Length: 600
Image 1 (cartoon, helix red, strand yellow):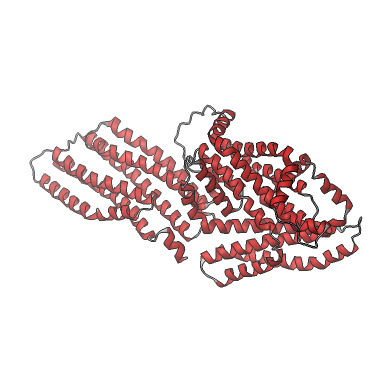
Image 2: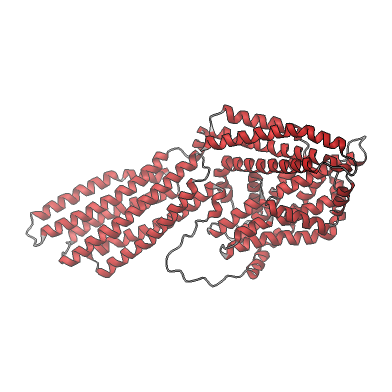
């Protein structure tokens, strides 16, 4: 599958380059024959659409590659989150700069809140940081580097073609994606060149200086393509040709900032109220910021001109404007988002309360069976985080298996029917969670996983299978043994109970350690489980000797009791076997995440 995806990418790039080469003569002819009122609209349209397609595809490729390279470390970055609003903002900026999309970051936040991995107060600061991080893309594309696009494509392709290491190949995808972004911008810029002398279009762009119209157009366009970075790329291309004024560029940038909220809004539909609040926070930040900026566009434009580079000497008119407008538009975009963050940061607590008031809790419908708490398909954008969600859910499942195990021995050795049925009923929650986690991991397995993520997915899948087997051993085998004890009136002596309970303590410790080893990827706890093997052998031998002495005693019903007690001991050994399997899987996965990344 990986090779197939690579071949599709190579084919796409090859035909894109060929199309551009074939497109150049037509574009040149169109420019020659295009007078003030004559434009070859077909050639212009395919140039714009083809360039935008390359730009969007390049963004996607670069974003995917960056997430694959840095995705595992994003967990650590997100782990820095706390109620510290400044740290949250910095984290949001870093994560968004990595994945190159504030929309994706906000969608991720919706997923985190839906999965109970974050609170609303944490997400507010991150959203502000995400809006800053997304301006990095505009700053990059504002540099006139389109002439290096084919070089980046060639370097990226060479990295993919020559290296067999997955990490190097991901860097190749990243470089290639960046080249496609610049290449797409070059195609769009060349396609728009004839419009510099087309008066109707010049008049249309002049209308963009009307802030309401500019904001509306950019918001709709951004909502349709669901990428503010791509919208800003188009705006900067217009600026490169001198087709818009700075005021129009600012209005379009403001509209792009509003349009990017649509993605998070759509993502929150049908999600818990906490997720809706995240999307509402994003929308409110943008709308309030735009409303504040609306009457200040003219003075803001003067300030942006003041802090931005001046035109080179000798340039005048349209050429002078085209040389500085891209940088000015990018700076305006960055300053707007930084300004919003600085404005709202001191009031995050009050803002969160306002959002809670605006989006109140709904009465929860009565749910008869347990539901997953952490699993959210919104996390599929970042497989490492989806795997973490599964890990949290496995911890919930493991706690319920542990509760069954704790309650099981008293119920089996001396409990009544009610106690045994209570233990059996606990397995219903385990089975339901097992089904949800299996289906979730099956969906994760279809994503583009690196080697470490694949190993982790297999580790988690093996762990839930072992946990489910332990639950079945308790629910079916041990509970039935308890029912058999009651039916036959067998009484287990205090001495035998002591032997079984001692063995059960070791088994319980092994189960707890194995579960912790899996969910925390802790080699030390895994080794602790394996080291208990000698204790299990010793205690099992002592239990066998005790049972042998029972056989030669004068107790009535000794054979029935012996058979029952041996079966209980065998089932305890079976539980330890599954705990040991979980631990062995952790040890077998062996190297840590950083070691594996270096090996790749």
